[in-house]
Image (cartoon, rainbow, N blue to C red; front, side, top):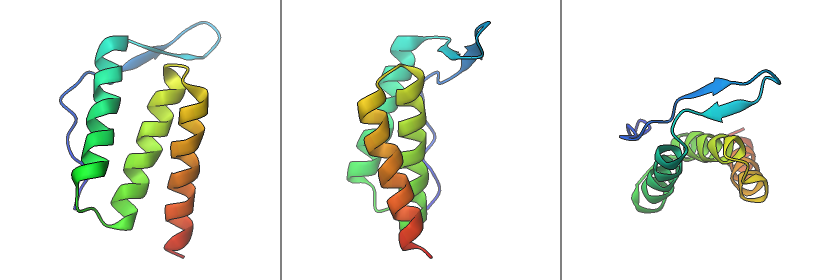
Length: 84
């Protein structure tokens, strides 16, 4: 199964310090919640779940939710390693 299409605006730009800044922070937060829901309700194979976890972790980092970001990124690594 492919990664579900997120209906929210997940775009960002870079500031002068090369940090990602969400174009629409509220939309990005809703998009993160959408991916979390898809992860919970979906019947995804481990690779798709790993990709979704990686995306959640990356977007959480962009909105500066670093602790939660680390949880999802570590889960993505764990899922990828289980495929080896």
